[in-house]
Length: 111
Image 1 (cartoon, rainbow, N blue to C red):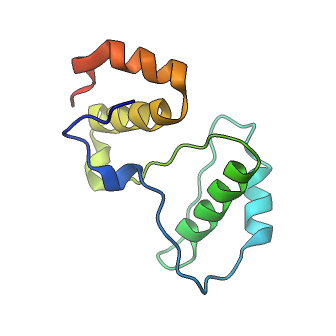
Image 2 (cartoon, rainbow, N blue to C red):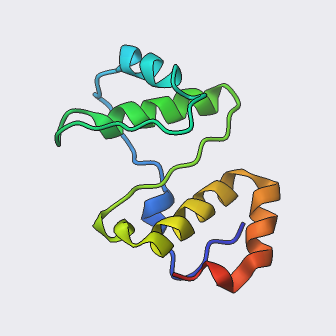
């Protein structure tokens, strides 16, 4: 799917981890255990490794052949239209049928 011009590409890119990052196997296994649920919330204070464990989970899923989507959220994503537009784009990038549906919707995704 072609990413719209207004889209900030960094929001859809998986962050790169430093080379000397602690592998968080237990946390990744715990998160992998909730994949069948509708929603999983990862909450902790800054610096506790939320991004690190989510990147490691993303990489583990991708290594198994899954097509995980990534979306980095910020304060501006409190706007429902903005959040939904980015969520749809993130999902469309990993699902070809969904991506075709989004492209057909075209301009309606503008927030």
